[in-house]
Amino acid sequence: MRVDARRQVGAMPETSEEAVRTAEVETYDDELMEQAHRAAAAWLRSLPERAIPPRMGVDDVADALGRALPETGEPADEVIARLAEQTEPGLIAIGSPRFYGWVIGGTQPVALAADWLVSAWDQNAGLRLITPGAAAVEEIAGEWILDLLGLPSGSDVGFATGATMAQFACLAAARDEVLRRAGWDVEQEGLAGGPRIRWIAGEERHGTMDLAARYAGLGAPTVVASDEQGRIDVDALAAELAAGTGPVIVALQAGNIHSGAFDPFAEACRAAHEAGAWVHVDGAFGLWAAASPRLRHLTAGLADADSWSTDAHKTLSVPYDCGIAIVRDVAAMRRALSMHASYLQATTVGADPHEKVAELSRRARGIPTWAVLRHLGREGLAGLIDRLAGSAKIIADGLRELPGVEVLNEVVFTQVCIALEDDAATEALSTALWEDGEVLAMTSRWHDRAVVRFSVSNWGTDAAQARRTVDAVARVLGELRAGA
Ligand SMILES: *Cc1c(COP(=O)(O)O)cnc(C)c1O
Figure (cartoon, helix red, strand yellow):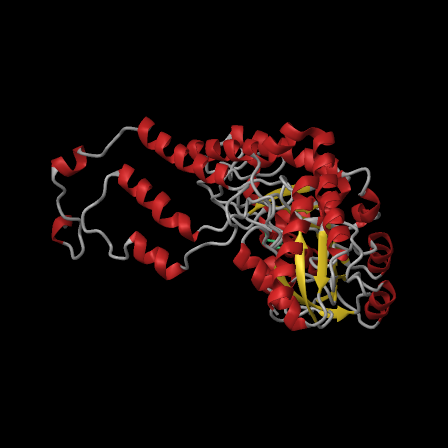
């Protein structure tokens, strides 16, 4: 029996020929792109001097944009004008050279230019055979990163959305491998009913380590003590390792967000490996210390670990988003993260980019990283890292001289944590800085004290900006004290 498809419930209605014929096929609109370019240039040029905090909140921006869904469309140039004009008051100047609010980088021009090309090329960069141009650039970037950070060549390098998802990719590989060694096939069996994995981390690990572990089904960590700078206590770690049996993962840290401190990798990796553990290092910003001959000593023993996660959108100053997952055991990473399907043209060489991260369809986000590394070279990158750390030192030394200011951490890298005489005064300083707008630094709590944290992570922060930062804090603090 023949079925008339049009009679079936839900069948597609006839399409008029006219509707099919009117698609706009223009692939490039000079004026529109120029308009976006002008808006981008105006924003970027304003960064060094504009007040850093946003001037408007979400509701006001949404009202200005217009909340009603348009029934008929708006010309593209009006959409872009609306976006640029109405959103601007709600933008925060993260790219300011005096933005220290979180470890968040600005954007280097070469990275932005490369990122524009990534968007224009619009490669779904999951498969080597299909997007060879993007794969080639990312593979070179991956090899350079291993070289620059002194990590084992041949490790898998995946470009994820950020350090959190890079941590997840690494933990997925770690989880599957430690369970495999315990005779449990997690790809087949899942986690339920299998041996419980202990994962051990220091008190001052970053919160995203716990988040990534939750994504990976690992639950809460077994926490061991950290010292006064936030470095994991290796004796406590060894004792904890000895206290249990079964599959175990140890998470270490390169760069504490309050102190900048680095865990003692050589000793911690030795203790962990003696107990059969997989060692992961969260080095979202700190891993890059390994690229500076002057600061490399902070990361001694780093290469002894099994996996590492870091960000390019922080220290390397590429636009959001780009994190990097690095795993020594290539087979473990593939087992955890690859999938095969008959319609996907898999490579026969190495791995496809999608097999090293949690995404299948993916932006070629490694390309801006390649551009920054190509632009800076080994020496330029070392110079960038040294500039960030040197600026942190200038800020710490300057702030220490101000009345009532205490620098709480040993400034070994890019982080400076200060406090005033009591929590209320410290918080008042942070609020006053926000209202003033010349310098942005945020409050946090560290060792049960309110602190103001300066995270030096913008490529434009140099000695002059660091001194200007000290002067601005001195001025704001002076005004606060005069008014109090
Ligand atoms: C920023 C940061 C993360 C999380 O990185 P995202 O890119 O925000 O996902 C993890 N660990 C440390 C130490 C960080 O500074």
